[in-house]
Length: 321
Image (cartoon, rainbow, N blue to C red; front, side, top):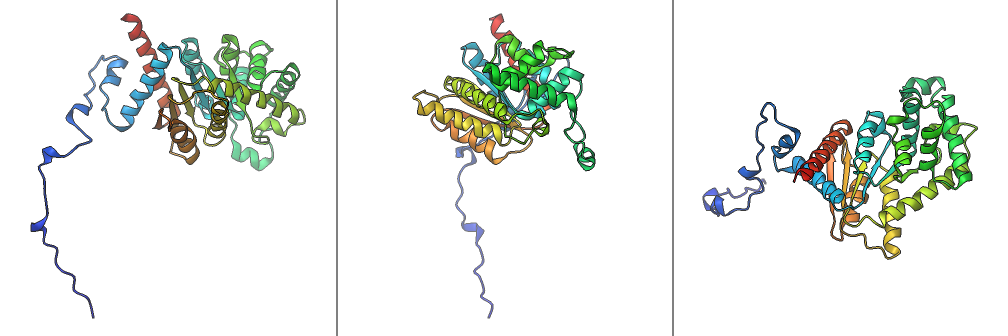
């Protein structure tokens, strides 16, 4: 037999005055329409004070304060930042003092070197893989591998070794837009963190596993020194889903284990989607002791120029005061 349920009597519900309720969205947080001729700072100021727009402004404010207080600003990114044309934007931030250190995955140095050497990069992987030619460009791998071996022999990290090759070597017509070369020129620490077998030059006979491991490990030690001084600073992770979040977490663990106070700092993860490791190892776990983690979701080629423009406008505003 079907059980008959009692009818809900909505005349008995309990209510309260709407004005007594806490509300997350207020009129004062609404955006202001754009006006023709407005400058970029006005554009930022007119964004809604809600969700992603609020996080974007918080990111710019945190990095701007860190720069003004001479605190570290570390930028970590995967190869896509280079591939979507943002190297000149990063180099400009380096020139303006908004970059204290850089960390990259191994593919980042491939695309940075190719753009510096040829003015183009990024092969069409699928058809090249079909025909067995993927990753077999001769000059790219030879220049990278020889630079890494020379760096190993000279006691350098991989980032400095490849950066020196681009800055001082022959045939790099477009080195002025190279992140690695400009890091060396400006004396900014740049570290490359590889997983053996993930990058095209690892396939070539000129690759030296011992050199890859030694130079990348030296860069891990350099990164740990940087992270040990991150108190009050900002860390960006742009588009690295696995390697850099894992490497950063280990560098932070090492720094804290050795007695360094690294508690109140800001982490910012920028990517197309929220992913487990960046969300956990960049945004959440490192900031539990008093820092702040921010996630910005969107295309690198839009978000990074917005952040950069906000930092530049903020710096100009502080100088006018």
